[in-house]
Image 1 (tube, rainbow, N blue to C red):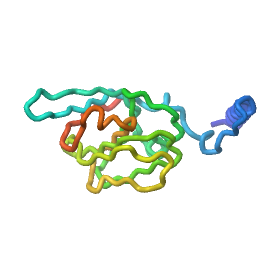
Image 2: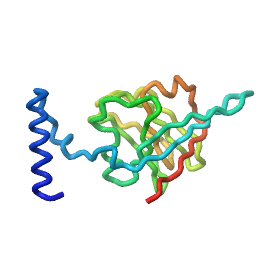
Image 3: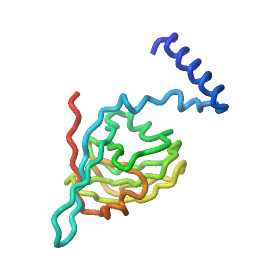
Image 4: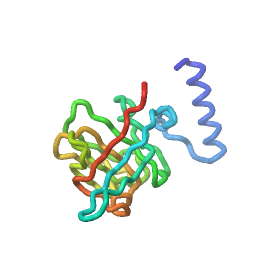
Length: 167
């Protein structure tokens, strides 16, 4: 980023903060706009014994680089019910997440290498520094708006698919 562009961004943020009466956090100034993240359609296939599988679609941001994964949904103030974020993990590993600078409650789906939900964490507490672990190697983590797991009755064993965005 050029010095003049960085200066313009800082001045814009300061002007905005003077109009709103709130100074932006320094970290917030460094965050990438989520519109720069790749997007994908992700489906969770819920298997209900004795009934046809239900498919639930979400438009997700893909945190496919270390910088994007570090940012995640930090500083997001609202997440529509049909949106979320996926964190692909290659190679699969035990993954730990936290809610630092995350203002909204999230549900987390830890997706095993077989494409099935291996662990579910509901209602992750905003701004918490507690580590939320997959407890076993996983190929991805999906973050959805808090309450989605209960609303859709998602559970361990349900399938998760998405198409990697084109580069």
